[in-house]
Structure formats: C-alpha cells, structure tokens
Amino acid sequence: MPGGDQEPGRYYVGVDVGTGSVRAALVDQRGTLLAFADQAINKWEPQFNHHEQSSEDIWAACCIVTKKVVQGINLNQIRGLGFDATCSLVVLDKQFRPLPVNHEGDSHRNIIMWLDHRAVSQVHRINNTKHSVLQYVGGVMSVEMQAPKLLWLKENLRETCWDKAGHFFDLPDFLSWKATGVTARSLCSLVCKWTYSAEKGWDDSFWKMIGLEDFVSDNYSKIGNQVLPPGASLGNGLTPEAARDLGLPAGIAVSASLIDAHAGGLGVIGTDVRGHGLACEGQPVTSRLAVICGTSSCHMGISKDPIFVPGVWGPYFSAMVPGFWLNEGGQSVTGKLIDHMVQGHAAFPELQAKATARCQSIYAYLNSHLDLIKKAQPVGFLTVDLHVWPDFHGNRSPLADLTLKGMVTGLKLSQDLDDLAILYLATVQAIAFGTRFIIEAMEAAGHSISTLFLCGGLSKNPLFVQMHADITGMPVVLSQEVESVLVGAAILGACASGDFTSVQEAMARMSKVGRVVFPRLEDKRYYDKKYQVFLKLVEHQKEYTAIMKGV
Ligand SMILES: Nc1ncnc2c1ncn2[C@@H]1O[C@H](COP(=O)(O)OP(=O)(O)O)[C@@H](O)[C@H]1O
Ligand SMILES: O=C(CO)[C@H](O)[C@H](O)COP(=O)(O)O
Image (cartoon, rainbow, N blue to C red):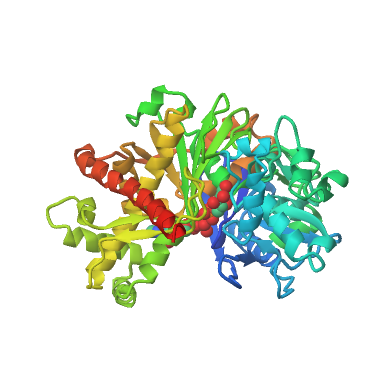
C-alpha cells in the first residue's frame, strides 16, 4: 500500500475521461501507477451521427473513480490533481445548469460529443469562407471541432439552448471548472478546437464572418476570455464542495487541463530512451510521434518551428509540449471501427462463446486464432486478397474529407470464425496503413519521424502494435505504464503542485520505456504492395463518386 512507504511519498491524481469510460490513477513522482479505477459512461445516439453525453454523469463517474484510487492512503500526501478528457462540447446556462443539445429537450444530455457529425452544413460554410484561421487546422476545419457545433446550436436550438446558454466548455475545461470554480480555459482546448491563437488570441473577424458575432460582442465571456497553459495551477485549488465529491483534501493544486490525446502525448513523448537501441536516442524529441489509440487514433508530432501539413491539424503553438508547435493527425474511428467490424460479423456470437469459455478477451482469442490458421507464413500475409479502407466515419487526416466511406474488397460467401479473424486482421492493418499515410504527409511537409510511441486502449493489443511497426517500418515504444494517458494527467497535477519546475522536467521524470517492438523488415515488400492497394481504394472510391455525380 502506498501509505506504507518509509519516506512520505508525494502523489498526484490523474483523471482521464475517454469516450467510453472515465479512469483515475494515483501516481507517484516517478510516474508509477499505485492505484487505478475505471467506470463506464453513458452515451446516446438519438439519431444517426448525433452523439451526446451528460456532464453530470461524467462528473459523478470522476468522483467514483477518484474516491477508489485514494482509498486507504494518507490524503495529505496528495499534492495535485490533473484532468484530461475528450474534446466534447459542454453547454451550461447562466447559472451553470445543463442545457439540452437535442430536439427532445433532454437537458441531462448537454454534451455534443467530439465524434458527432451533425454540423456538416455548418462546417461546409465555415470552410467556404477560406478565413486565415483555417491555415492552423490543416487548411480545412473538421466537423468534429467546436465552431460548427456552436453554429448548429444557434441555427437549430435557438430558444431551448442558444439563447439560454451562459457557458460553452470543452469537456477538459468543464472538469477543471467543476473542481475549482475557475472558468479559465486551457490553451490546449482553445487552440486545438476553437481557433484561438496562442500568439494573437481570438480573431473577431472569423466569428463575425461565420455568423457567431455574439461571442465578439460579449468579449468571449461564454467561450473563454482567460486562458492558461496546461499544467498551470488554477485559483485556490480544489474547492471544499469538489473535495467532498472527489474524496480529496480541499485546496490541493488543480491544473489547467488537456485534451485526452494531448495528455497521452505528454505521458509518452518525453521518455528517456537510453539503452534500447532506438534511433531516436541520438535525435531531437521532434523525431518522435506519439500515437494515442482508443476509440480514435491521434498522431501527435512536435516541431521547433511551425509546419503546415495539409489535412493534418495544427500547427498549434504550445498546445501540448510548451514552446513546441504541434501537428495532430488523426483517424476518427479506430478502436470503434475494430469493435464495429467484429461485433457486426455473423460469427461474433461463436467468438464470444469461445473467448468466454477460455476466460480470454475476444481480441486475445482472435489473435491466438490467427496464429493457428496462419500455419508457417507470417500472420499479416493472411490478408493477401482482403483489403479494407478504414474511413467508416470520414477521413480526418490527411485527406480531411468527411464524405469518405469505408470499403472492403475480397469478401467470400463463408462467414465462419476464420473469416471473422481475417477481417479483423485486415481492419487492424488498414488502421496501420492510415497511420503510414499520415506520417508520409507529415514528412512531406517537413517532419522527420523515426520512432512511434503508442498508448491508449488499442496499444494493449499486441497484433495492433506489431502491425503498426511492420507497416510503418518504425520501432514502436510502449511505456512501462500501460495507462500512459493517466500519467499525462498526473503530470499536469504534479506541475500545478510546483513539485517540478517545468512540464518537460515532469515528462522526463515520470514516463519510462516499457517495451520496444521492432518492425519485421523481411515482410516489408508484402506491406508495400498492400499499401499500394490501400491508396488505390480511396482513388477508386473518388472515381465511383464522380461517376454517380455524373448520372
Ligand atoms: N486489452 C485489449 N485488447 C484489445 N483491444 C483493447 C484492449 N483494451 C481496450 N481495447 C480497445 O481499445 C478501445 C478503447 O480504448 P480506450 O483507450 O479505452 O478508449 P477511449 O479513451 O476512447 O474511451 C476499444 O476499441 C477496445 O476494444
Ligand atoms: O480529437 C481528439 C483529440 O484531439 C480525440 O479523437 C477525441 O478527444 C477522442 O479521443 P478518444 O479516442 O481517446 O476517446
């Protein structure tokens, strides 16, 4: 038990709100997780492409998991608290009560989730303005960002939501407000999802041009006119009320938050790699790409000077590592896509029954099944005639085209467990090819990447990790702590407490290499050919669309 240490330890609590669950950890100064808890959270999809959550549910889940991880320890040893969360939009009225973001008027559902694609018409009009702020989101604004969602609310829920709204928060900022009563926003959220510039602040002309001049006239009070860097300490720390809710001492330091992918980035990108035979050991930190793989995958690369990569978000100054520019590539559905493919297959009930009988997860079962059927050949070669294009929820990067759809070629009439396993493999490979596609776009624009640092739920899947190494041709570093996103959140708490002098120092001290997975270079020719097919798939999809438009 941590409280049994001879030396009184200094601990930090990290809270990570993902798409499917809320997690908390108690973390020490070396970045070791001493306790972990998680709790599933509700999601609603009232209609296709509308995804909603509840800020009250999420806060309640944060309280449950936090109380669990600090059970039995001396609370005086907890020095700081940090939050990260998905970049979802929370809407509250002037008295900070939830407002409905839906036609049903259900105010419990007051969050438009990041993967919600309701604002297609709005984002189309925003992109047609060609406003200069768009240069800083890869040239094209994503429907997953906040400006189109705000415009949707104004145009569709004027009376029930828009006119009553007092506060629009990114979910990470909602959590830090709940904990401290401070409404200051994190630079991370505002720069990455709201068009704020770390150097120039808000651009009035953008909001006026898109029809949201309301924010300009009230000096941005509803979306944030006080901005703090992630890791900065907020107000007087944890309020007595939040302290009761969370089971923590009042007054402990609470940090300005991060978006979840960015917390994962902090948790892995600054690791000391000495002694692992990695090329990046002798290279600057800008040669590393952090890939945070959960429901979605986010590809976080940093640079000393701004790099403009078409179709890749950013460059964002100081949004993740202070003093560095960030480019963020992404795939909107990765974990969600694998779950979708597997669960939708006719052999899924058989898979579930067999995995349960062996007390294995369905993915561990599928991986061992693939090992059985591959015989003498490398497992990846099982998909020689089955190819997947993974954009079932549009392409975030590098094509920035939300109209793209998923594709599968090579289907047969059989639908047994072998077919399911091979389709699962082809999907995992397609996601890895998507990562290669993003890396190539980043390198063409000036990044020079040699090593991947993977974290998030999918990094627990050895097949997913090996395919990323083989298909990109780069070594993949996995952290000692599998829950690296929580280490990132704890780094924030540690910085806010003043125990480290900088985010960089905390990153270097609190993240550690666990395992390195090297690419099997002997398979390269096969994956190069499959990559050629991968690129052809999207080319063909565009041709089909053009043919049908000509009808
Ligand atoms: N042990 C595991 N093996 C394989 N896949 C896993 C494992 N754990 C989680 N996943 C996958 O990771 C995804 C969720 O990752 P997570 O980081 O928890 O997501 P989020 O942060 O979006 O809630 C899911 O698609 C899930 O199937
Ligand atoms: O846009 C993002 C980060 O900028 C993420 O995709 C979003 O926050 C969801 O994350 P996750 O897949 O971990 O739930």
